[in-house]
Length: 252
Image (tube, rainbow, N blue to C red; front, side):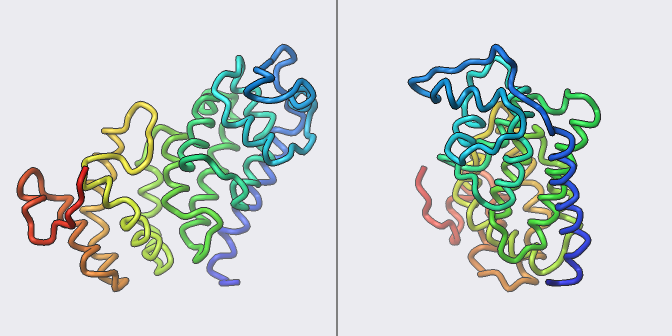
C-alpha cells in the first residue's frame, strides 16, 4: 500500500461505515409495490420491507434501476449500505453507464433528506471520488465515477475541483484515460454520458475545464500527441475544428 493513500482509504472506509450506521434499519414504505412481471416477485418486494437483509446482486440492481417506485427515497435509503459497498467493489453493472446509478440517487432526492442522512451520502460520494483518483487500478474507472457523482448531485464543479487539485501521476493517468473515452462525444458537442436534464450545461463546463487544465497534465504524463490535439480541437468551433489537419475524421 502506498502510504500516501492511507488517509484517503481510511476516509472511504469511514464513509462506508457511516452509511451502514446512518441507514441501519431503514425499509421501503409498507405500502410500496412494483410490477411482478417487470420488476420481481412479491417475496422479493417483501425483502425491501425488512431492514438490513442482504439482497442478491440481481435484486439490488433491479431495485436501484426501477424508476416507478412510489417512494424512491425510502427504497434508496433501504439499499444504500449495500449499494455503496457494491459500487466501491465494482459489483454494480449498469446497462449503459454509471450515470444510471447517479440518476437513481437523484430520484431519491437525497440532498433534501434530513441533515445527517444527506451528509452521509455526500461524504460517501466525496470519499469514493477522492479514493478513485489516487487508485492506479480502481474497480470503477474515474470517468464513470465522475458521471455518477455528477448525475447524483446535478453538478460537475465540486468533482472537477477535486481532480484539479489532485495532481499526482495516477490522477493524471485517469485524466488521459477519460479524455480518450470522452473525445468522440465532446468533439461532436455531446456530453459523453447520458445526462438527466442539464446535459448542455455539464458538457460546456466539462469542455471548458479540459481546455484549461488537461493539456499541461497530459503533456507531463507523456500522453499521445494526438490526444493533445483532441483537447486543442475542443477549443475550436465550426469549420476551424473539422477542417483542422488533426481532425480525427469522426462522423456523427
